[in-house]
Length: 453
Image 1: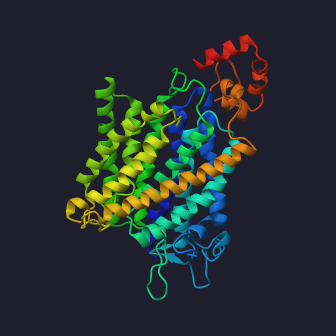
Image 2: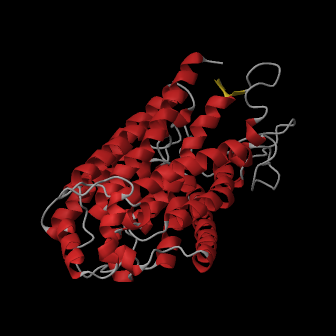
Image 3: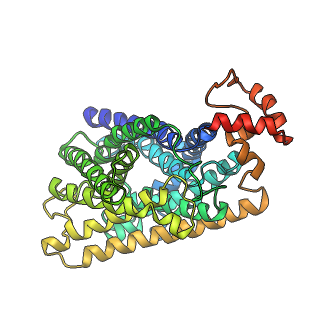
């Protein structure tokens, strides 16, 4: 065991955990004032449900001994983390760190992946339905996909026995372009289709972000945590971590410029929302590629991802798909761009060691990257759609139209984010104050409109 490596991985795990509250601010600021608490609660709900399942059987299903040709680990092998803490011969290791530290690091990856999906269903999803979906989706989609991508093991004879995408096919995905971002983006698209459009979607300005400083703060926290996300994936305080760290600085910085350039040319002005979104788009794109590209190619990727994602988010209005906070346009599209770009620009002298098309490697690596991205996208979308459809047909996934108009915070959580006009933010008073509104009082609706404004 190397204490320096262990310290770095534990710090990185803490940074990645901070990303989920950061995402809560990022998404919360982009919603309406009467939906910010629900948006944040869905992120915190993801922490709760995923962490519990991860400890119970999620880690074992992801990193246990393969039981299906690279498709899934044995969920019962390390049930409740048995055998992880002490085998009788001391702490088991993963590389140079205790396995229990690796368990924690991978847990926060699962948490942020689930939380990312929530941005597509803002303002209209039942909290209980979301929690049920999160529990099922992380079990039947994230755990298998993470096993495909992140599990690298060998048998006694040295034969590979890990996941079919990462170890079997040889797809380069250092920190989760496929397993995290394409995975979450495809599931988000499925839920957006099932829940349908918010009232007034594309017709008025009622769904504009209510707190842009929250958005900027959230983007900053995400970027800060992302250094643990990418550089921590080296699983040690070493040169690979430094390589990933500098690329995690360069790519999103260039992506901000790419996004703002598109805004300036298209709309005539650059926005704070665009800067925050551009940074996230660059972070998404560099996630799979941070160990495979030079810093110069990382900046090229960032510039490309920022521009492409800025154009992609506008397609939801043309296609009539209410991806509320642009999860599909940023995470699915950005993840695909980053994953495929490796096939073009992977440097054979980089830690990943891939040889891209621009370095004379031909189309072999690009083809592998495309197969990995497509497989994850299709699997996640299909299974997420099935899960969401069943939940919607049984317990219902969407809140009522009346509750959506009144505001999901008060309707679902009996709370309000802001104490305006002496309105209490406690658990019961807002519910009492909203009773006249639910009976159709014109005065109450007028007052609520003023609060929204």
